[in-house]
Image 1: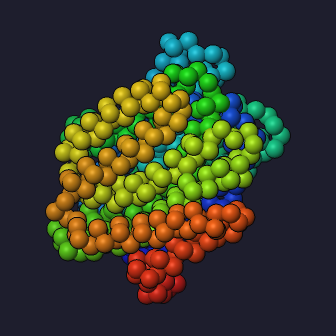
Image 2: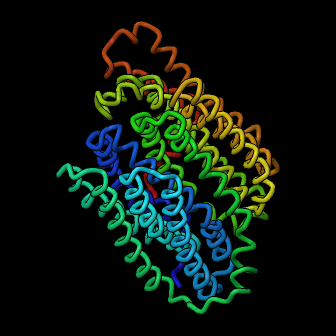
Image 3: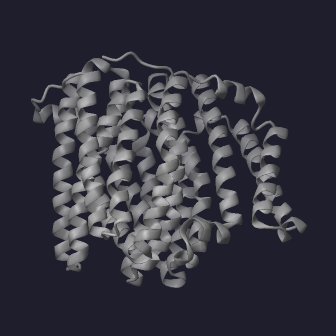
Length: 474
């Protein structure tokens, strides 16, 4: 079995892997939104959302459980992974079949049914791919996950990029996605076999239930609720407005949020197995979590506030004139980056401490509120109502999750971090309201960013020691 790497090295590997491909990936996402257009992009996202809901319902929370179990007891790998891999494959096929059957029952247009079929097949391979990566996280060898990420993004960029440049349409684009994830999933599986070991593929029903399904149930419930409130906006906009272009506007903003999730993933993913193994050491866990919250708040506020303040200019710059009606979506959804970053921290601690069952009660309440708010606000405000609902949902989840792990939270220190993060952002906003707001867009956004970064250093949210540690990351 591979030798564990420390947190710094794992963060470094994930950062390196993403730095190599994410700039190109971000440009590819912008190209996707522009070339497909709001209507076809909306259809694509509807099909992905439809298949994703079915996939997560059958996923069973196995990935999170795998990381927690194998990080503490790596000797279980051969038997445990043999069962989880078989379970994930069966669940993926079942979920894809269910999504396709429901698309026929709902009498979707034939074009949408074809997209759902392709999206469901893609979802099977994506589900397996994520599970294979959970093994690398459990053994704390993120360099192999970084290799898998690079392969995934490059294969999608090459195959789907060719489709976009040839203007072959949304069906061919989805087919390219499917092929890319099929190839990456197979290569990543071979990487697991060669670097970690060959599992025992002799599943036992009793073992499957007692050691996998039953312990994973709290995580499974969380995943179901999470995918509902993540995808309910897309699905309910489509159902209540019947306009794919509005779905496209909403998901243009959501593309930025999905791209942002790279940052909390890089920082938090290496921490989960470490916290799981050391959860009895409260002081050590508090220190790690506070540093993670500080880093993520700097990143999320620095990105989300400028996008919100300059939403009109940035929407046209990034997505083109075809998305000029998407500015509100982009601005409001950008603000969700802040609570999302805090939810990565709090949610990881909830899972590592085994308090998921208690968390699910609150998540159920939030999910029901999300569905109700989506219905009411989309009826009243159209697609913009879904964006507001997403922001409120993430904010409520932060409150609930922090409450569940309150005994592990250094509250005074966290409040100081929040104060130091938001004051520079508000000063940047105030600066924009002065004469600076009459200058060019470039001067305005540079002035706001300089104000924010200066404030972070003056308030010691970021220090030169932090930069030195970052520079020495290997």
